[in-house]
Structures are given as C-alpha cells and as structure tokens.
Image (cartoon, rainbow, N blue to C red):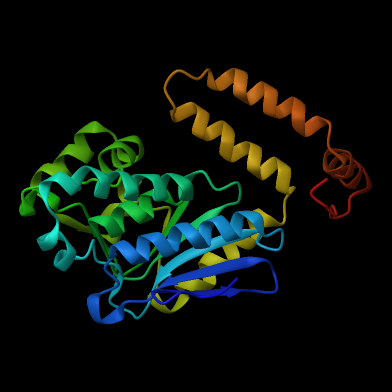
Length: 261
C-alpha cells in the first residue's frame, strides 16, 4: 500500500496498518483531498489480507485532526454543502464498517471533523494532552460527518447535546469519564499502547472479530434485529476451522493458531 500526499501509511510486520494524517502545518485539518485519500486507503486495506488491524493518528504532537479545513469551508457554496457532508459521511461509514479492528490514537486536538473521525473508529485511545469536541455551532453549522449520531450513541443524549450545543471541548480525562474514549495514556506511550491493544485483538480468530464488529453494528442500526444477527454470526463461526482450533487449543491448554479459515 502506498502513502498519499496527506496520509502516511506503514504496514508493520504484525499486520497493523498505521495511517497518519499528515498536514501538520494545518494541525492535520481534513480537506476534501485528504478525505478522498482516506477512502482510497481504506478500500486498499480492506482488500489486503496482510492488513489485520488499523491505527489512525495525526502527525506531530499537537493535533490528531483539528477539524475540517476552514479554507475550503469559505469556498463552499450552499448548493454544494449537502454533497460535502454526504461525502464525509460515506467515508467515515466505510471506516466504521471495516471488517478489521480500527483504533484511533488521539495525540492532541480532535475537534469537529477530527472528533468525528475518531468517533468512527472502533476504539479510541487518547493522550493526556488530547482535547475533543464538536464546535461547529460556533461557525453557524452543525457536525456533518456523522458526529450527531455517533456521539449520541457513545455518551448518551444529554451529554452529547451539552457538548454540541455549547460548542465546547473537553480534556482527555473527562472524555474517558463519559465514555468518549476507552483509555488515557501519557503521550509518549500513545502509539505503543494502541499497538498493544490492537495486537491483543488481532491475535484472535479473524472471522470471529469481523462477526463481532458486524453484530455490534447491527445493535445500533435501525430496522435490524441484533439478536438474530448475533445468532446467525455465532452459527457462521461454528462452521470455521478456527472454531475447531480454538476449542482444541483450549482443551490442550496451548495457544491457538488461527488461520482465518
């Protein structure tokens, strides 16, 4: 997989793909081209059997992604605004729907579109210096990349409304307290801990991981019976070689060797 002009990529030997948003002079703000590049890289990662999990972070120490690019906002005609929002929603939905685990390593400001990017990841690890928020109302708009939906699902209606209606930001410790992030770690340990958590996940049966992600998504989707989806996924897992290997390894008191079959 090849890095793009605004996103650096690194495939580690353990199968973890590191995606680094790299517009450091703009605090890694997402412009349209960066969103398009993210879409391309996610498509490539999904098709690459060597990619077992993904970590998303921002370049430098100040920002994960400080928002969408305001310079592009200024040029956006009202007639183009819906397409702008729907493009971002589509790409972040693609991120959330990845069949492999995705961890956001939040190394600084995660505001606006940056917070929405983190919300679309499956797990969020924040440095002690991180700040998160959806300040769009201060610009006379609202979150447009799925933030109103995902933040509410994560922290509940009241807390989500307080954050979005005030346009304020919160520090990492408060984000952890309300369930917006999974862990808070010292900045120098952020990537190490993110890699360790993801390595624990991808050591398990790949098919089972995918089915967990699908079942949890079913619990949040309207018009879908999540229990039925769970039961069907459970049955599908029971037909795999990895299931047989997992049970046999447990009986023999040894680590399982999963193949994804």
